Image (cartoon, rainbow, N blue to C red; front, side):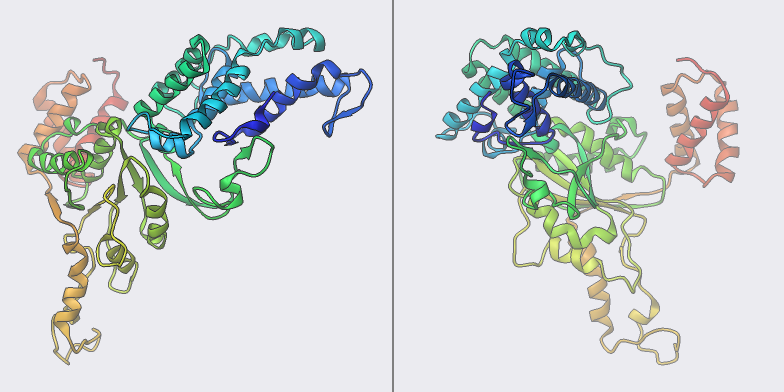
Length: 472
């Protein structure tokens, strides 16, 4: 097999399995015929058979990890290609087919992948007496197996594997792959909605010849032990319409996001106000509603602000729109992390990329705690640090919030609005309970569970659902 001749699609995650299968295809007939080692590998019948079983094991493990079904070898090959971030796949994501010589290089690689797809394993199974290979040719997966992809993406990759089998030529196979890139994108940014920042050891990619890929070598999306952007595998499937009330706030947020994903001018956005009013849920809803239009959300915590420039460096050249999301943002007067954020949002020499916005939520309007010492020159306040230029101090602390062009206030509901939220949630969950009794219980609940808020209403409904067996 010609895996060493790959040009564009040369470095993969889980690439060692491809290399092992290619070696088996090339050398299984030599097992036990003379040489004990071929290309540096043991070539006894026992060793070759063990390697084959090991490959079957890894394919089944991949099925459990990703949720694949059907022909696992074909699914594995499809997954390699949809996750391979290269100059061609990144150019095609969201935009579709690109022009240039790169197409000839990609077609060369697709020809090699077509050979892998069309390979007949029956002679190998017969030669090595491994009938168990049939397990991975028509594999039935459990809905509980997938830990990486959501059900829709997993099903689409399995369908892509079947489409590749139906393609009669490398040209058709290339068109099928390009269409996938256009519809879903490529790699982690194409297949997931939301992400977080992480540090620590990372298993790197493996190239066609087993050499470390870009991540392990420190050249890709986060070197081993360094900063990396990793997918959030489970995000609540909430939509803006699921949030009861706050119609003006939701419209303002949706309008700004719509402008952003449409390529028009948009602003950084601050959602502030009382706790439990749905600010964070609105951001989750935005991630769900605009995913199909290329929107991705990256969650960053306050202690990670020093990584912001590196994060932006990794995403600024992609064809997606990115919202950097900062939840529950606030600073004490002795914390200086906000200075990193100010420089990133506006004020540094390098212009913030057009495909990046910052959305933040906070219970504070002014984000940075102020004290009376910031606004007075009264020398009779010994416990408060004095500043010779008090207006400068105030402006310094307010300058961060001024960098958010859109600010949206979420206030706690009054009693009537709280009851409307409870009623709407009860109807949504099919709770058949006399309305007066429901509201009376809700009023008692909120008195001892955080007061009037949408969060308290949802917690009350969850309590009712847990205590009684309600059917929709």
